[in-house]
Image 1 (cartoon, rainbow, N blue to C red):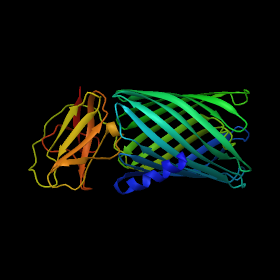
Image 2 (cartoon, one colour):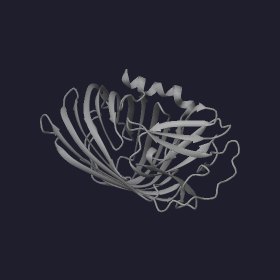
Image 3 (cartoon, rainbow, N blue to C red):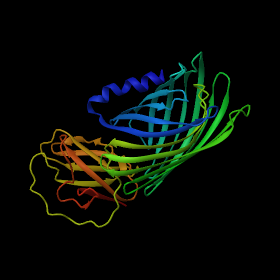
Length: 368
C-alpha cells in the first residue's frame, strides 16, 4: 500500500513539477560473482520530476555485452515520494519503489517495496528512521520482504557525509547493511564514494563492498562520468554481486557549484513587469531561511541554487508582486538563479552576483 501511495501521490503535483533528464552513453566492464569479466556498451536514461510536496524518479539501462557473455541485459526502477509539511523540524515521507531486470537468457527479477519515513531536519544536519516492506520476485517465486532503518547526514561546506543501518528480512534470509557515503562538489567536479558492510544471520551474505564515482562537467549540458567498485548481492531479487568499471558521456543539464570569489554589484537594470526586482533572506528561529523575491506581474517564479542541488523550486505568491519560499540553508555563501514565467535563469536586479564558468552570472546569498 505504501508503494502505491508513494507512486500515485505524485500525480497531483505533476502539473507544477520541475523536470530534469539525462542520458549516459558509454563503456562498461563487469564481473559478477559467478561469471567471468565481460565488456560492453551501456545506455542509461534518467528522469526526475519534483515539486514542493512530491518527487518521482525513473531510471533505466540497457547493456550490450560481447558475444561470449549473456548478450544483453536491461533494468529499470521507478520510485516516488510524497512529503508532509515540515513542522518543528520534522517531516514525513511515503516512498514507493518498483523495479526489475531481464537478461537475454530469459532470466528476470522484480521488486515492489514501500517505506514510511520520518525526517528530522536542521540547517547542516539531519536524521531519519524508516519502516517498510514489500515483495521480491527471483524469476520463479515471490517472497516477502521486511525493511527497517535509521540514518543521519551532515553537511559542511561542499562536503556531505551520510550513514545508515538497515536491517532486512526475506523469506529465507536475515541480514543488516551498514552504509557510509561522502559527496564533494568543487567547481565543475562532483565526487561520490560509498562503503557497505553486510552481516547476515547465517554468515553467507557477509561482506564488504565499496564504490566511487566522479562526474566532470565539460559544459552545462555535457559531462564525463566514471565509476568503479563493487556492489553487494541482492537477496530480494536473487541477483549476484559484482565488480564493475564504467566510463560514459552524460547529456543533461546541471549547473555546477561555483566558488565564492567577490561580490560586485552590477548596474541595476530598469524594472519592468515580469522582471525580478530584488531578493531578501530572513532566518527563522526553527532554522529555516525565508527567501522573498519581488516580481511585478509574474505568473510563476522559480529558484534554484547550490542549496537545492540546482533543482528548480517553485515560490508561492503571498501578495501581489511578492513570492516566498522557506528552505534550510547552511551558513556561508550560496549561489542561485531565478526564473520568471519559464524564461531565462537570471539574477534579480540590485542583487549581488558573481561570474560563473560559462560566461553567465549567479546571485549570492549570505547566511550567517
